[in-house]
Amino acid sequence: MYSRDFRRDHADLRHMHRTVMSGWPDLPNGIPARQSQAVLWRLDSVHRGFVQYVQSDSKPDWSRLAGDYLTEPAQVRSLQPLLDAITAGRRFAFRLVGNPTRSVVRPADRKQPVPEGAKRPRGMRIARHKPEEQIEWLIRKGSQHGFVVPTAYNGQPDVSPSPCLTQAGQPRSGDRGPITIQPVRFEGHLIVTDADAFRAAVRQGIGHGKAYGCGLISLAPARTA
Image (cartoon, rainbow, N blue to C red; front, side, top):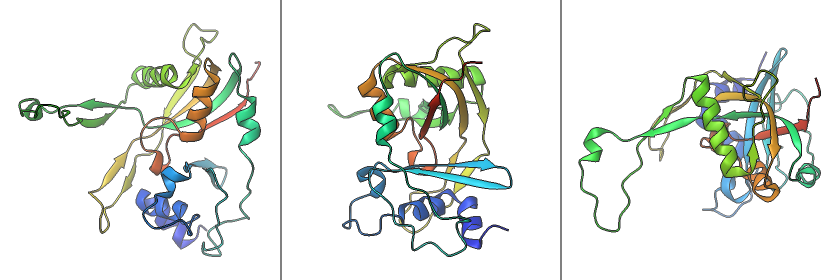
């Protein structure tokens, strides 16, 4: 049986975000932990439960969590050995829960005049539902972040996208409104083309929705079979 606090967080992205950020209670007011500590997180479903991965620049303090929130003590490991292993040309197996979207400008917004020197407001973010569009999104992110997705034995990109459950967060005081994310899990292989750019992507995350469980990329030795 999951704890009441975990069930609350699992049902609402904003609650989960706040619980994750509670691991950095002593930052000065006004400094968002997500950006200043490069916090990323991902919740993976496993046999009879969940594993939550949290990545950051500094060690979190989970002592304020309810006693039944975790089923075992949190394990903390350094990210540096992984960053040191990233070199141009190296092939990795990877997992990424991403938020592949496209920006759509409403017709009414296109007709609105834009003051000189100002940028036109960004359009609405629309989820990409077709697997080929999701893979295209990932390949485009690779070109921005120093990696490519190689071709598999079948002639297709060596990556498999699969939809995750739609996630939502309800507004609280000070929030702009409800949020909905339709994340996609990518699993496959990548090859590093720019080590510095890829290290930055591993540390800072890929795509939008980083505050809500997207963007953290996990790496492992490439599979040979």
